[in-house]
Image (cartoon, rainbow, N blue to C red; front, side):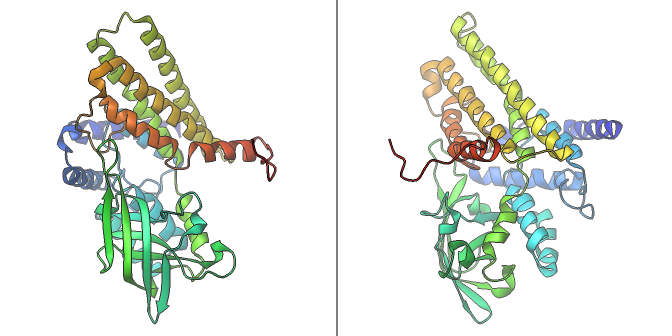
Length: 391
């Protein structure tokens, strides 16, 4: 297995040397260019067999072991290649949903189109149903062979570019909240669908709101039975996170040179306090990379326990915050100006944009508080607060 992994590493490293776009940061200077660059890069990876290693073996480049997937993501991070942001929901969430719960007709219709570049977004969260997904109110009423859907979704990643949507709706208000949820596949170009990008503090528009006004969705585009939406949603949310955490950690370590350049450029190479904090950060990032490696190895060995991913998630988000904070401090007043951002780049060295963006990572993918609760209750066996407890 070791020889096989090293051969794969050499293979993808050589391919990336020839094909990875080194100038992607300067080329993707508008939202439209970013989307076009993402589609082009995804197409190249599909052709090379590196885009969907987690899909079954009948798909190009699929059927790879988790160890092989890890090698691919390590090399993508090492080469500083663009992350597959636009196609992430398509290749992970949409695939997991269709593969686990979709009908044979739905799989045959949608999965090949994903490889041709069709993109998906996720319509789960709502203005009053973020951390409590069971509180959704988007209503779907069946009329003959269609559902009529009305409601609003928010924080849908890159919905403004999406062709299709994984949509969680409410078809009944009787019984437990989870019991009345139904999962639908929606065409984003259908009449009644309005998408409004959310302009973020650092200048990006990674998320969007989706407004649904009498949208007709064929019953044939329901995943599972009516009322099974909660169970289907769990298949969506359980899609791979481990490789993402590892890749992000490796990319952060690979971009430490940006901090070193800022230290030198700003004349802080003799500042003992800055050098101390830089050394601590290097150690902290190395520790996060080691944690992510350990986490993936436990998954490979089948020894992962609930809470392992939460530890890595929180450790990474704290590292990212510390990295951006140090960059702003080293850069001084000039680093506090918001320069034009590079879309899709978490560690750009554009310090104020990086600093503002870093705070989102203590919320995205499960807030820091939720992750701590998982660690405390599920790993350490600590009791919940007694009801009525207050300061």
